[in-house]
Image (cartoon, rainbow, N blue to C red; front, side, top):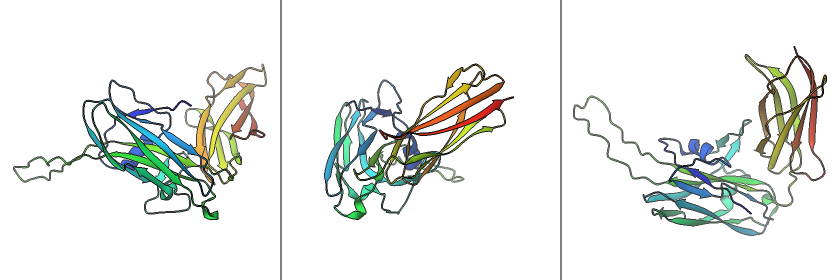
Length: 282
């Protein structure tokens, strides 16, 4: 199995969770001669209730500086666009962080050094744990606050900022008993915007597991049979959640009648979800 790395070196000045929305995205990479890399970028688990599993996350420092990090967790829900929404102070049944122990939780990474973080997940043996759960493991740089600049005239307020960066690793848990193959296309229409036309697609997860989906859309001319394929969309959808997509029509469509087919692959070996519409270009 090949694990994909995420290489990011970004400075933030305020909300670390805002950064997590960028740093924790799967398959995102910023290349450069040196930086900090974290691998893998996400963990997908299927641990039965009453069982435990340990995974390792590797962080490497290819810079000439030393950095300190602390490990924490951010529990979240997801909006219709797939953006994580932090749930501060909330510990609902979907919060995976309550079952996780990490070691070390604080460490220093010297120049040229790599370390592995042990992530142990202990799923309790009871009915209340037989469901999907998720969290973001955060690796936050610990930076010492710099002295505030001197203000000799006393006419303004000087603030000392602490530039820092962070990484996020999504962790998803789908126990074997959950039903993940229950996502459906609940809306598929053509809409006209101010300057372009697009398909408005809505997908709903009606199961009790986390769905890892692929959405295909293909347009066919009913005049000459010419086919147009839109870029494949890969996305995650949480139980009970709705995701919406604005998919621009293919370029080069001439006047005439067309058929559009949307196919949703949600991981089932037996069934795929589909929807079809007909439309005209005037």
